[in-house]
Structures are given as structure tokens and as C-alpha cells.
Length: 128
Length: 207
Image (cartoon, rainbow over all chains, first blue to last red; front, side, top):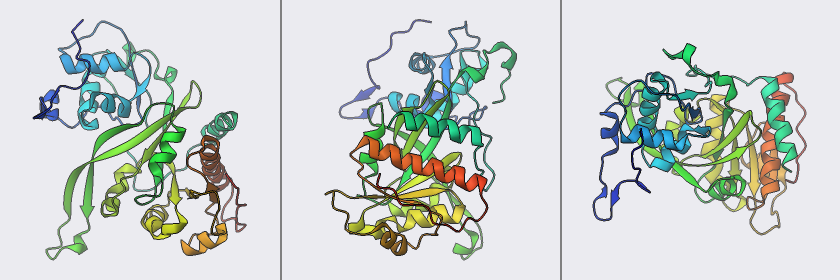
């Protein structure tokens, strides 16, 4: 699909957002896969199955390189909940691949594994 | 991540893992500066729905009340490696929203609580929040004029911090200072993971 994308969010000076944000997801706010703000997604470039609209195309354009859900939402200027629904559609249609996210957390905090912590520490040390 | 198309997708392992660290502290302590100084991308903000549940005991009828509010979260990004991307999320500055933060802290590695010695009380709510939930955090004393007015131990006492919580001095405007604060947090996590109830106070580093 090659839709023409607007340069910025669809807004009007006086009215503000021309499209109410939740209409793009048909009022849905519950994604079928679990996405967090820091779930990393990437467009696969594969032919897609399913019916996608302009908003889905915008999401795809924003994740040609790996990017987080939060970044897609921020750049589209739509709520993260809406982006999660769009991504869920796209993932089911084979258009995006998503990174592993921790399962919805239990009530308590769980310490991450040591390998992750050491990798993060080493990477930060390199940036000093 | 469950998906009906798992067998058709490239391995998700090829994607970097997103890591979330919260940057907290009340209004005016320098959260935005801290995040923007470290971020490799321009300041971004996303709206997230958070559900606040007020306890049943708060209400006369004994029924829990859920309220969903949309909150704007400022964030920044640090690409650590092809495998890990760190996202710093500033918590909402308004203290009245602090009880909503449960969802906000889901999946977070830990937190940085910024403190300004001119208004230490602005950081009380954040310290309290993370302590209650057992989320590891460090306190970063952000001073603006280069002259630290208080010794870090005075800050520890004023904030009533447990001994194991690292207190670092920092300048949120300086990138290396912010990196050192993040390193304090990671080291704290590593230490917490490998020790049980260590009583020695961690050294205070000038970040």
C-alpha cells in the first residue's frame, strides 16, 4: 500500500485534532497482544493480510527501523492505547514483528536477570 | 508475545529489548532536564491511560473506585547496543497523580528519584512510592549552582532513606553526570541481586 501520508498530525488550528484519536481504532482500546510502552516493533515489509487503513500505514512508516510503542505514539500524536491496537492488528496480519515484553506484571517487582544488568552496565560505561 | 502468526514472523530475538527506567521527583527538581540531557532523540511525550484504583476503605460504601485518566509522559531514549535500548520516562509531576503510578512502574527496571536540596519535600512522594512497592531506586541530588549545600548523608536523613539506597550527587545538565546516576542504579540492582540484606551503606559518588 502506498498512501500519501500527511506531514504531521491531522489538526486544525481552531478545532485541534480533526480526527478524534479513538476513532482510528474503531473505539477499541484493548490490544489483543500484550504491548508495553517500551515494546520494540519493526515493520516486516512482508505482504500484509487484513484490511488496513491510513493509521496503520502511518504506524508502518514509523517502524521501518526498530522503534518503541511510545515513540510511535509520540510521533503520531495519538494515545499509546490506540497505537497498541493498531500494532496488534498489524502483528496479526504479519506486517510487524514485536519484541519480547515481560508478561503483565504480578503485584510485585521482579529483579531482572544478571546478564541483562551487566550488559546494560557495560554499555553505559562505554558512554562515559 | 503471543501471536497467531508466530510461525510466519522473523525471530523477535533480532529486535532490541526495550528497558524502562523511571525518572521521578516532584515538580521543578529537574526531571525534564535530566531526561533531555541523556536522550539521543528530541524530547517526546506520549499519552498513556492509567487506571487509578482508590482503596475500598477510602469509600463509605466499601466499593473500590476505578478511574482511568490519560497522562502525558515525557521520555527519552538511549540506545545502549544492538540488543538493548533504554527509555527514560519522567513521572507526572503533579503529586496528586502519584497513586496512579502502579501501571507506570510495571516492567520498569528501577527508578531515579531526583532531589533538589532547596525543596527536598518535593521528592518525598516519589521515595515513598518506590519504597512501598519494593522498586529499586537511587536518589540523585541535582544541584544547580555547583555548590552542594548539603552533604549526601544529610539528604539521606532528610528523606529518611534506608541505608542501602544509593545517594548520588549530580548535575542534570551534564550527560556524563546522568550516565553515572544510571550506573549507580544498575550497580544497585546488581548488588541487590547478589546480596541479601547487606548492611553496608553504598559509597556516595559525585556523579
